[in-house]
Image 1: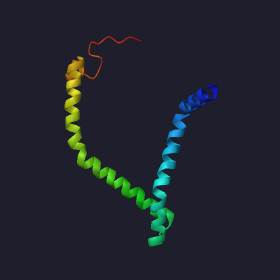
Image 2: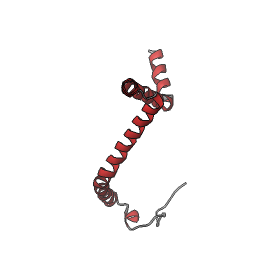
Image 3: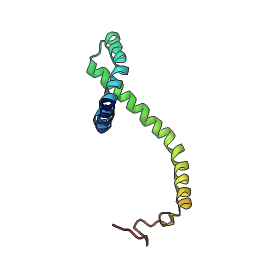
Image 4: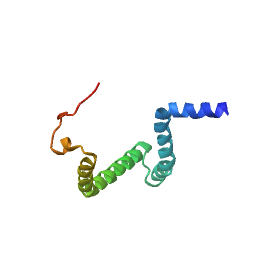
Length: 106
């Protein structure tokens, strides 16, 4: 039981290190067959295949953001405005960027 708790705690503490490593391993596992197939089919090197794949993913993500960003941005701005009204944060609603009379305690 103590060993299990220690391993859980250890994983929690080193989560900031393990997360990028596990994401990298997962991406490698997913995209290795694609890169190997492009090597075999078009006789491209791994560097060229990887560069094309990364650029293609970047273009798809940028296109998604460019296409759906305005559709998502407007309702999000309205939601944030209504959340300010609901929570009573009218200073930000009125355009005040400083404390505007709010008491800040240190």
